[in-house]
Length: 528
Ligand code: F6P
Image (cartoon, rainbow, N blue to C red; front, top):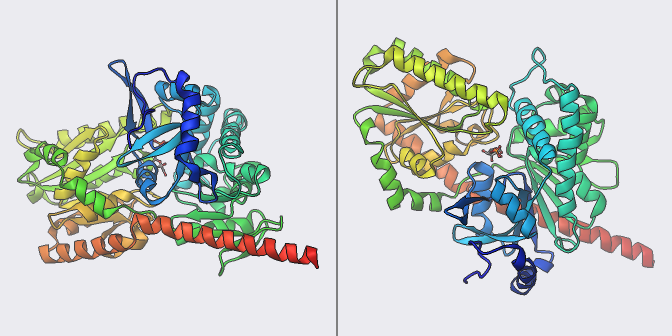
C-alpha cells in the first residue's frame, strides 16, 4: 500500500492532523487488546538530512535490528523511542506519530523530544557508562562506580526524568488501548514499568533486559536508594525477562537479598507485596536465519565481498563489534600478538580483520577506548607487519553488508567479550559462514549457553588462553570445523528470533488469562 505520509521533503506540521485521522482509519486494530507498544531508548530508525530531503535509515545494534524484524509477526506494533539526530527532533516536534519504513513492513513510531540535558544525564552519565559498566563486570569492589554529586544529579534530573517521559507516553489513553501490552526494553528504562503500573494498572507490562543481570553483590556497589528503585521499577512489570537462566537467577536472588521479598525460584515468581505476582523469565534473543541468508546472497554483499579480496591467501580471524570496552577488543589484539610470537610460521599467513563500529563517542570512556584500540593496532602492525603483510586490518565504520560478506568467509570468528547479554555476532556468523569457519567464543556471553558446545571457549581475562585458543581454532581439521558449524547452525535455526518472540507472547497470553480468571472470581465473590 502506498503511504501518502511517507516522510519526504514536504512540511510535516501541516500533515499531523491528517495523519492522526488516517492512522485511525487504517489501523482499527490499534484499538484492541492485541495492540503492542514497544518502548526502547534506541528506535528502529533515525532521520537524517540529505540533499535537502529528510531521509530515514535503519539503526544498528542488536535491539533495533531484532525488534525491527518482528514487525511482520504482529498485527499492530508501535514503537516509542528517544529522538536522537537533529532531524529526529524535528520529526518529533512536528508530529506525535509517524510511519517508519522497516524493510518489508512499516511501524508507527513516536520519537520523544526529550530535554537535551536530561537526555544526556540519562544516556551519557547513568545508562552509559555507569549501568552498562556495572552490568558488564567492568567495576568491582576495588574499583566501584563513582556516584557523587554529578551522578546523583544525572540520576534525578536525567534518568528518572527520561523514564517519566517514556512512562507518560506509555500511559496516554489516546494511544495505549485498555488492556493492551507494552514491552519495555533495556537498561535505559528500568523505572518505566513501575511508573506505568501506577497510572495504567489495566495494561500488561513486559520488560526485557538485553544485557547481563549481575549478582546482588555487584548491585550493592550502587547506592541503596538507586538499586532499590531499579529493582522496584522492574517489579512494576507483569513479566521481567532476561537473556539467560543465570540473569534470571541473579534477579531472583537480588529480590530476596536486597529487597527482602518472597521469591518462588522453581516457578520463577516474585511477590512484590502489592497483591500481584511478577513472573521472571529468560528468553535468549536470536536472529532470523532465512533473512540473513537472503541478505548474504544479495548483490550488495557480493560487492562488499570484493573489498575483502586482498585478504585472500591468508587465514582470516574476524571480529565484528561496537568499539565498547565490554567487547574486550584491545585484549583480543594482545592475544593475537602472543599467537604471532608463539607461532612465527603463521606470519604472512594469517590476518585479523576487525570490523569495528564507533559507538557512544560523546561518552569519555568510549572515546578513551577508541584511542586504546588505535594504539594497540598500530603497535601490533608495527611490530609484526611487513611490506606485504598487515597483521591487523582495522575498518572503523558501520557497514552491515561488509560484516555479512566477512561472515561468509572467516576461518575463525573471534568473540572474547568480558560479558555480553547474548552476542548476536556469534549466531549470525554460524548461520552465514560458507568456509567451515570456527567460532571462538567467550564463556561470559549469553550465546555460550546455547552454542558454547560448538565453539572453542575463550576466557576473556586470560590473554595467554585466548592465544592458545586461537591456535587451536586455526589448526582444527576441516571435517571437525564443518561438523561444529553445522551443529551450531542447527541450534540457531531451532531457537530463532520468531521463537524468541512467540515464547514471550505465549507467556503474556497466560498472564492475560490469569488476570481474567482472577477478575471473574472477584466478580463472583461480589455477586455472592
Ligand atoms: O542491548 C544493548 C544495546 O541496546 C544493543 O542493542 C546495541 O548493540 C547497543 O546496546 C546499542 O547501544 P546504543 O543505543 O548506545 O548505540
